[in-house]
Length: 346
Image 1: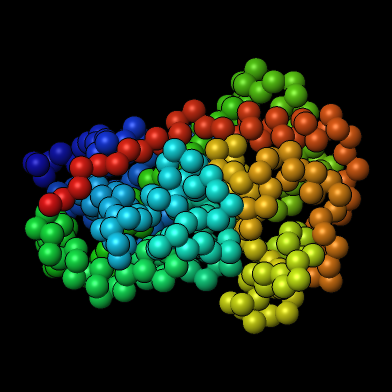
Image 2 (image 1 turned 120 degrees about the vertical axis):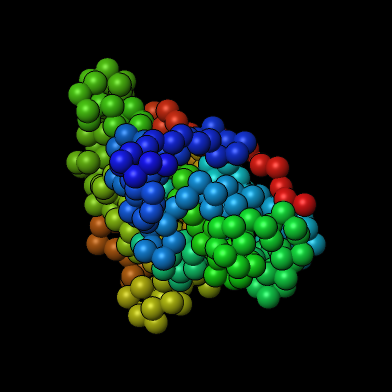
């Protein structure tokens, strides 16, 4: 590249996927800030750690790792097994099935727009996508492969070994495996929904029912008190009265913060493409969005830690339906990332 050519735009497809990345190369030095992941309408720029800037090669490597079942002890489970592109980057079951058929006690959260999350996992125990990426690999009821074993296994695969050397200048390590997977996950973006087009001035983008639901969402139903901002989440934790009538309720965020007030609180999920990622809630207890709205309409399950934002809404059946229509119609993207499994290294 000639030095006088200050800018060059290169489009590259994620191997096997439908979503394109726009990589802006500013100078021949290609500094971190020169790489920008193209985002759909309605979303802000994708943030990333200073020590893990995105590149097409790193993203492609991360995608291979995301779909590779060799990162599980018995070679049967990948990240995509529980966060399936065809199932809203969740898995369509109440609980995911892990190593030897084991099941956890929480629903698989979607990876959609996880790039914008301040915390990861329902209880927020990971503060970055890099940290999150390694958790399921080592978890004994998920992929059940110790991280040293994972590193050793990846480095025995020549195709991976050469990629890590090219991208990171070293063999695979726990740190750069996490960086690669996180870089790929930051490209799983959903936006450019009818809601975004309506807000941009296209008043025909939403049906009358969806417009009524939107008015309720941002008004009397108070959904936006927690599902706020471009990603429809406040990135905070709330007790909304789910599962609090169980014999031993899941303590949620309290297990991480050790604060009594966090008992039964869980991270607010994004509502982008929410129609694709059911069942819903941290325990996967609600199969439909109508069940979700009806839960809020009744004011949740009363308990001493219930958030003040949760109260009886007294919505009519038509208003419940309108809210559901807004979420299904208004927040379903036109550019859903139907990523396919890439060819894996040998």
